[in-house]
Image 1 (cartoon, rainbow, N blue to C red):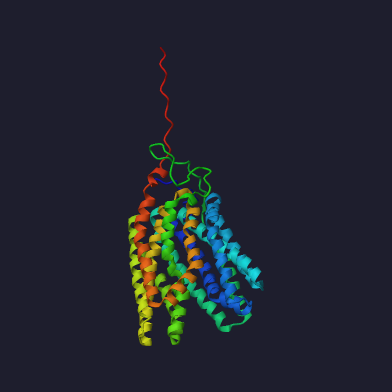
Image 2 (tube, one colour):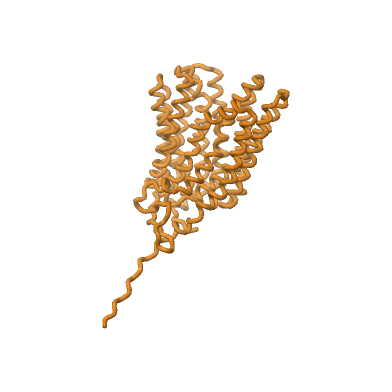
Length: 442
């Protein structure tokens, strides 16, 4: 497959391994801050600031809905201005926004700050992905992202432990210390990212045409094409399928703790333990799982396997709805969580490969921003959908969710082949205009 590679400056003094180490360091530092924020923010805003749980949930839903829209334009900015500077700037913006949480005292300031936070986070994710695309050769990106994901989970675990200290102390000063840690973490992340080699902004390719001269379909590759990904229906279908699989995200952080509290309050500690199990599992085994993914066929196969494993996970969770002893319920929950982390790692590895391989090389930022909207959608709609389906639906609700995961996993292969079908046409140069035959001279 032909590509339009980006220039990396300087190439000899900053070897690939050094760039990946710098990326991993930035990931670790920001993840520690994120872990502290995620574990302490809900209680800080409800107990210290005084927001009701309903207002808190509404504010976060609105914020992530806005953040999901911001990923494409900010990813486009990374393509046109360079992903390193864009990522560093968005990390610094995140630092300032988190620092503003220290003085938030009412719903409206919280809503504004939360929207800015979600917007900066969505843009930072897209810019980071574009940065990986510019610094890491095509065949090594999935492995690099697996290492970054393992680093992310390790950082989240450390940050969650520090946030847990703030929860245990419970004072305003303790919560503010956790938020300060988060703000400093993103400040350091921005400075670390600036140590990476510069990736030159992408130069848009001229609009490609198929060999028959007909206009290219759905790719919007013109020099003034703007947000071309918004016209790419095939990539949108792949993103939609992946979004369905991302509904697994709220399970361990929200649904399982509520499920345990409703059916076995004496196992309340198990919710946190399962979260730790997931984090440790990804940290230890994500890189190994990603080794099997080397191209689009193996990526689609990994996602299909993920759908089957997530169905099995949901089936085990469904069994915990039966009237079983407490020890049996605990065993079922642990078994379901183990299967879930296996499915998560397979789905992540496959989706990374797919997201990059189906994106034009000169529009990685906006395409990764669009693909990343699935995370924001899962964070926004997932809690309401899954609490209704699972907490009200019980065992049958779990089975419905599992079948949905399986259907999405099986649909990814056809969706990828459909999106891949015209890649050769939109990567090919436009044919030279035909020359009119000379008129006879008599």
